[in-house]
Length: 237
Image (cartoon, rainbow, N blue to C red; front, top):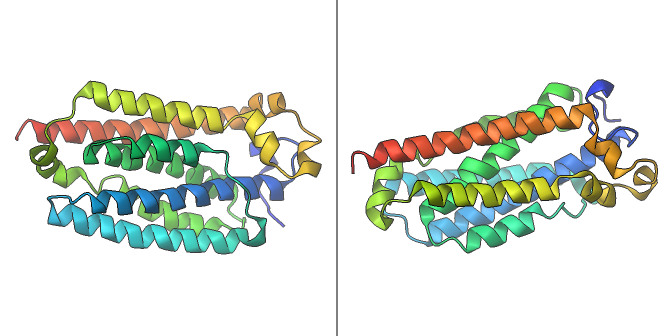
């Protein structure tokens, strides 16, 4: 039985089990996506031994996250809301290591931290609490793995403009907002549950609005920290 504070329910009448299953499946999809991104970035040949080692460490940790969340979800694995499919296309089309890292560490990791924060705060008796706590600790470190190597990246591929960062930020935010909405969520939930709730009820949920505000704040903080550290490094190159 999944236990958490009913006042923080995102999906209203939907069972606690279905809500938990949906959110953990979304996290699993993100962890798998991160592993693929990191392997692609490493294959591009990064001119920084420290960054290479940091990203290899992150790959190992993300693979372990995938294993742990897959074990939790088991036979209850759902298809994702689609954010992973669209984000994969956006990142694959980027020809800059820096921008790929920004989409990963400055945006996707921020969204992951928002989801983990929500579950840890509200589901401290839930089945994913221990795994979420481990993942949050490691993801909090991952968002800053690239900072000390920005100088090397600038020498390697030139300086990225603020407009380019903002373009990627806008694309990724649009993917998140399009995927995580009431209509998509109802379509993915257990048929018996989704029959009892309308998409607008999810959109109107006080807890959902709070969750979105908190997640957006964390994503923005991670993105701004990435950009600020990048341009600070650029001043000395």
